[in-house]
Length: 85
Image (cartoon, rainbow, N blue to C red):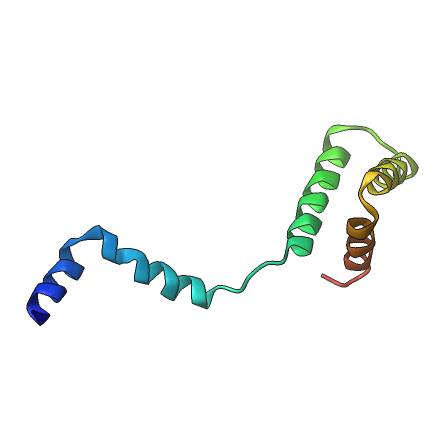
């Protein structure tokens, strides 16, 4: 019976699930807030690169965007924006 289990694990690709869990345990989770912060940074960098916006115009755009977010998210994102990277 032990040989049958070993054979199945060696041949059957459905037994690879354990590898996923072993690898995912090693990786740290990224928070939603951190992910959003990274996306916003990419967004801002892209806007700066593609459009000729002044610093004031960029700040107005970001302020308008933040004001349209629900208050609970806005507060969390503003706190995250103040944290060092």
